[in-house]
Length: 318
Image 1 (cartoon, rainbow, N blue to C red):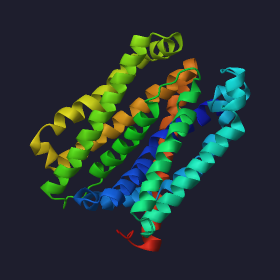
Image 2 (image 1 turned 30 degrees about the horizontal axis):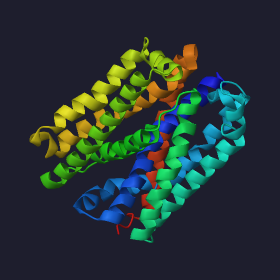
Image 3 (image 1 turned 60 degrees about the vertical axis):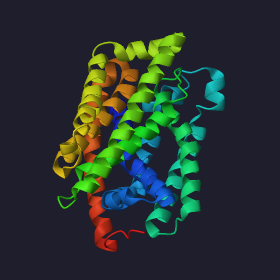
Image 4 (image 1 turned 180 degrees about the horizontal axis):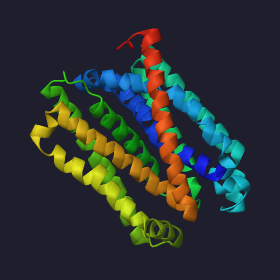
């Protein structure tokens, strides 16, 4: 039972934290580039960015369950040199601490208005470096042996896409057609980037035909995971893409909310497809625990958001 709980918490945390982490990236990008789109999305992105420290705190559940969620934490599932030099519990926690504390500091600087163009640019550089490490730690290392150079970029794009979908989902009815169109364009561009990276990663793995990569994909292509993959592709990729091709959808905040919901479900299903097959016959219990943990995290973030607004008023937009 404890294995399922900690594995479920890991997956739920990965899914839920994608929104605040992606929101932080978008806020930093806007600080560097400027543009109307940042003004439009600020009411959604800035409160989401304020949840980054909460996401860092929630990672304690992952840290406490290392032995249950990651086979290498108990000295199994990876080569001795890998265990000694990289997949070591202490090194894993140090990398996570540096990353999450750094992202939390960046969120505080951005929300307080103290992050100028240089700080935001350095913050994006820090994000790029750290996501290259922790995306492997938090997701791929549940089943050591598979690696892909494009995987960190894929995770980063999923986080950005989740933040944009969240912004679409919570957008107020007062959003005008022009602002809705800006958001739709960003979602469409990011969605195309995700689809491209996913497809090219598979093509490269298929062409290389290396046993570890082939085994990883074959496991996730077998029943029931092949169906999960198709469901995620349809819900989070094909349907939103087709919908965003129509100008009536792009200019309608209410229709964009539906697209945002589809994308968020698709992102969650995709992360489940990445993580759960590693647990074999125990994947179903981990999936059930994920649903419970995800509901708890959503409720917790809702309470935290109300508390932030109550104590600090509206987050100042700079």
